[in-house]
Image (tube, rainbow, N blue to C red; front, side, top):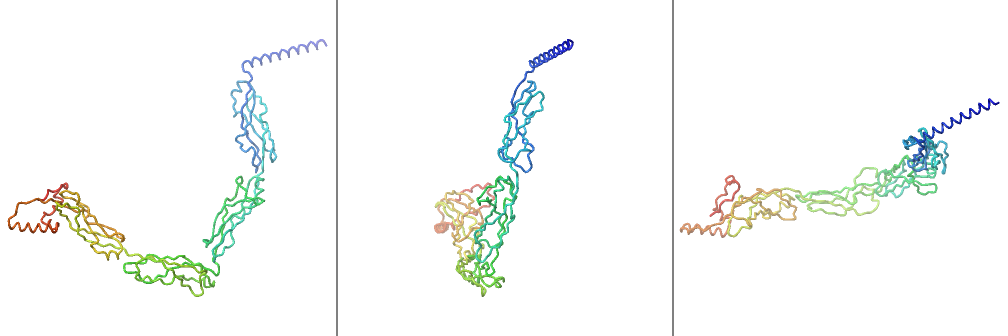
Length: 460
């Protein structure tokens, strides 16, 4: 017994020494690398999400995070970032419905780290199952086709729209409706693609922005045909005779352009033309409009009495005509004389043929304005005047430039008797016609003899 007690005492002393050594070593280590406590914000990842399930809450999964508090040696803690931790919420066992709390688990691969429970340690989760439902499409047809036409049964494509979303949103839908309007302009098969509007079980309009739709539009085809005892036919204008010489019929039109006819189906099915009564244009020169009646086959009548107006457009033929006209001098000073070359211009006019044929040549005037010009040789552009408001236009004027020599006459010594009589004759010619007086002036020299276009000296 004494030996046992002695051995036990020795063992206790050994353990106490070992424990004391460990405490001394730990204290020594902590003095070199003390324990540090720190907190980091860790983003939460939702894992094991069941198929065909949508997470309703949290609404923005990218903004969900928890605070992780941990401690450990300073040398380890200082190197840790949020990337060394993971925070997950396992949804594999989370029931559907609002207000379900799911635990958050934070983990780290770092050694010598102690983790506290995260804050918060639970997140409110709302899961809803995704379901699909076929919603029937209904047509709301408004308006009507014109008289004499019938609208057949409409074809809707597709007849059902598949809607996919959370059960609470899908289950309230009852019907999708498209609206199509018919009018008097609809005389052929109408094809439109309106956007459907959805209604709930109570018949109220409801939004579907949170749902997936198999179709965003519905193609509606409505066949439109003429009735058996009605037919719509285009009217043609029956013009007879010829306009006045130099004129032609440019165009014809009628208002309304077509009419609705009624008669036996066997007659209406046969091809026939609907013409106006003959409209005589013999000798006419102007456009006109007139009320007309229609020439219809026997047994076919207008569905309703209406005024029909035909318009016939008549215009003259267009052509060109050449006028050779003398050039008139304007603005020449009283103390000057002038010589022009050439003395006539060739003017080509374009316009209505009757106007050109009836226009006297005197109505085409060609002039050159010498106002303010000094003696010398000048190159001037002629001015052509034609009657206005007749539809005429000047196509060309030749020559484009007129050569004009302006001179100032100088006094001469008294002539002999013979010369006096000649001067008297010339003087009388000058007083009567300045142009004839210039006949004694020298001929205009060739342009090649006047290099640089320098003015010639005054004539004496």
